[in-house]
Image (cartoon, rainbow, N blue to C red; front, side, top):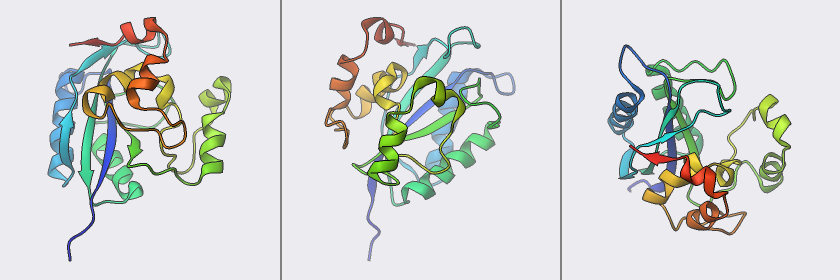
Length: 189
């Protein structure tokens, strides 16, 4: 009996050099490392340059997105992502800090995890609280997905028609709802 596979979207980002190599090289190597761990890459976005967030907090980022196929559960996949981050020097010491590699599981099919009420709490969390609090469990879809051009612009390349299971909008619709200056700040490399 074969295992069931699911599609998921992973957002990639980096803004620090690793062993003298720039973020583009790190992202390319991280994609290879994911494939080496059995993650099937179905589509890969272009690479984009994005201003550091919050503004002035460090060098600009290189961002991308992957559409993947996996037989891992969301939690197992997250552990693989964290393992690859560690391999590339990621240390989780500061929320929204500079990093050698960031791999975010932003969507897994149409799953809402851990439950609709918990998702809603994180979706509606005020901006100042977002800087202070980090969830203790996996929240899917990523609760800030619809607010971030640096995720949505690359995601359009790999899953433009993915429909947010809570907001009822496609990636393209969420992107079109963002301010034009946010979208324009995400530029292809």
